[in-house]
Amino acid sequence: MDRRQQRTRDAIFKAFRSLLEKKRYTHISVQDIVDEANIGRSTFYAHFETKDELLKAMCTEIFNHVFSEELNSEETHDFSKDNKSIAPRLTHILYHLKDSEKNIAAILSCESGELFLKFFKEYLSELFSQYLPETKANIPVDFVLNHLTGSFTEAVKWWIANRMKNTPEEIVRYYTEVRFPDF
Amino acid sequence: MDRRQQRTRDAIFKAFRSLLEKKRYTHISVQDIVDEANIGRSTFYAHFETKDELLKAMCTEIFNHVFSEELNSEETHDFSKDNKSIAPRLTHILYHLKDSEKNIAAILSCESGELFLKFFKEYLSELFSQYLPETKANIPVDFVLNHLTGSFTEAVKWWIANRMKNTPEEIVRYYTEVRFPDF
DNA sequence: ACGTTATCGAACATGATGTTCGGTATGATT
DNA sequence: AATCATACCGAACATCATGTTCGATAACGT
Image 1 (cartoon, helix red, strand yellow):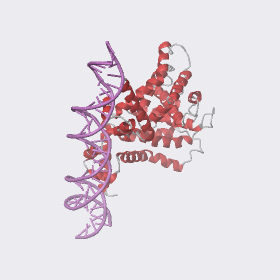
Image 2: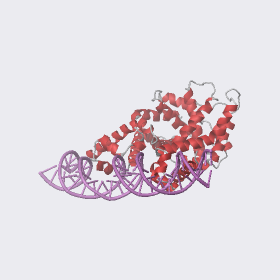
Image 3: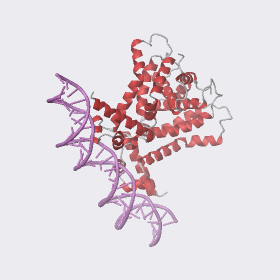
Image 4: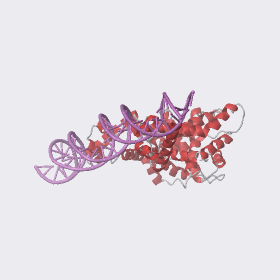
């Protein structure tokens, strides 16, 4: 890839992230991005067709970065056959998220976070499905899966909203140990 | 309130709901709403300053409708003092949601659903906090609360995504009985 | 050093936004 | 029924964002 392309792409991403910290996705115009990134208007459109495409590309990039190692580890080990706990894998994911703290925070701090969370949940869904216990109590499998991924995602959102003060290990422990109270 | 105001307000809401079923919130213009509702452009702005205000008003209206009875019941009973189960109250809420099925589906079927879910979670948070058990295992209270409201919301979203085929009782049972698998 | 191509910047058509205003019609009040 | 108030209409307007085009310039890869 041409250096110039990479530079402008980076500039656009950087500007976009910076703007996301200030205002909501909906209220950011292409013009804002162009001004902040200090590039020509037509240049933006040479890279992305729309603002939505930019968001999508950015989510994909972050997502791939965050899960690159984790995804690779899937290739080398078949977790569905051994009985290793899922906890260390969850912890692993959280460490990666912490690395990309700034990006993620910017992405999630607005309604556009839904897009990234969609990726995230899809990935978690695959992960958890490797660890699903036998169906119990006549609860549909996809309800259970949705519960597991959804509540883990909620835990992550709580973590980020609290500025990631806790360690990944703590969060995973909370998540693992929290039980529906005995009403 | 003047009948005319009520009429146009209804027309706007109806048009907005209809449009939300067809396209994403972001891509709906005020012009679209005005055309669909068959009202004058300036009339819209006489009612709502922006599209966001409209969404907000609509969420508030639906929310108040859905929870009117439930909220009233809080006034007559102090649940924090007796030991009644939370399950029937959750079921109650789901029945109300089912009544407003169309509205809710339209609202939630897009990124704008976040606004309604925000209301929803705030309400659930108050509800669940009345039933919180003593803090266990050194897990922060607001983590637990976030987990309970978040995972219930996920259950509701799953329910709606599945076109509300299940009965409210079933959903509450799933939610109550689902446990983190023993990893 | 040369050919390629990304960027620039200006210009343009299009369409949405939000406002204004005089005229009309409808509702509330007596 | 008569009257007053006001909500609606619709056209016009300025403003702004969008997405495209194009020739010139600069940076890149080889």
